[in-house]
Length: 173
Ligand SMILES: CC(C)(COP(=O)(O)OP(=O)(O)OC[C@H]1O[C@@H](n2cnc3c(N)ncnc32)[C@H](O)[C@@H]1OP(=O)(O)O)[C@@H](O)C(=O)NCCC(=O)NCCS
Image 1 (tube, rainbow, N blue to C red):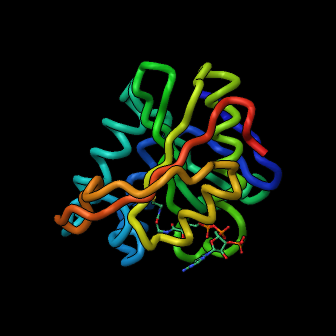
Image 2 (cartoon, rainbow, N blue to C red; image 1 turned 90 degrees about the vertical axis):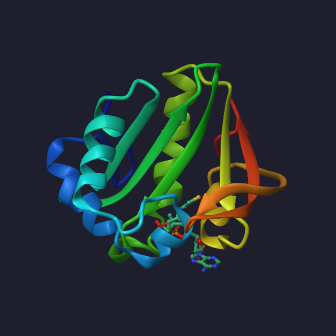
Image 3 (cartoon, helix red, strand yellow; image 1 turned 135 degrees about the vertical axis):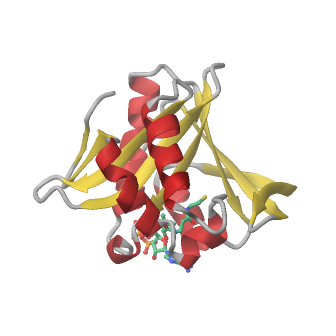
């Protein structure tokens, strides 16, 4: 997998050394509220995500977002590749790194890479209704909000309504 430069950030592939970091960040209440993760979130869940999905799965393009100068791990961004020219974007930022524009810059770089290198035609974004921070990230990466879907995500073991948006090749700001 490539390394993707993004200004003061760099997106790099996961390694097994990232398991503990994923475990730690996944304890965060905001992440547990808005991302579909097992609860309780155990080390084996982090290991499965990193080793089976992020590293081994051809259907995912997952990256750790680092401070390019220090190597500090700040966020995770990824694409779920559907194999039909489309993908779904996912992301979270570690609590201590929030509020610094990390996710918008990383998502922009990821999407540009998805279109230019992986030949995607469309990237979809879905978030639970009310996840305004995620919506702002998507908007800043150029996504167009298309509407609201009923009961289309499962969070905290419950079906919840979702916002949906898309980004088409050529639209990344
Ligand atoms: C969503 C998330 C990835 C944002 O990451 P980040 O690196 O902090 O991104 P930013 O610092 O650029 O903040 C994003 C924007 O949301 C805004 N924002 C943050 N919290 C907000 C809130 N509660 N309500 C409204 N806007 C909010 C910020 O002001 C910023 O917009 P601005 O640039 O116009 O000021 C981060 O909050 C997170 O990890 N949340 C939990 C996991 C999650 O929800 N993932 C997305 C699932 S679809």
